[in-house]
Length: 124
Image 1 (cartoon, rainbow, N blue to C red):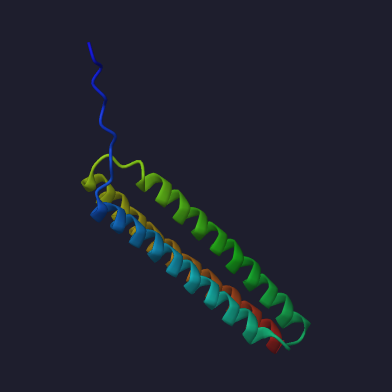
Image 2: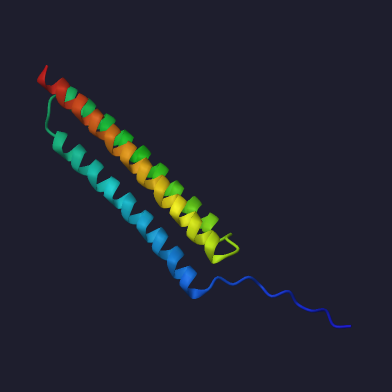
């Protein structure tokens, strides 16, 4: 008796494209954070020692945020590939986008606060 092969789950091209777009969106968000961090760090160059210390703090935070965001993007991409249905993929994507928007908002606020504190120290 011939055994019947179980068909492999294949992600439809539309869903794969959707997943690729999600990863690309995450990459763009990462690039945006990195550009903002680099701009913040660059604006502090040439300042007094207090400003330099503040810039280093902004830079450290920005890179930590970037690392976190990239990790989240790759975790999402990996999770997305485990989806069993298109509906599951859409829900995962919606949850991921919502979470990333919240995270990026929090990170932007924290970078702004850190930058403000660094600027305040240069006036002292």
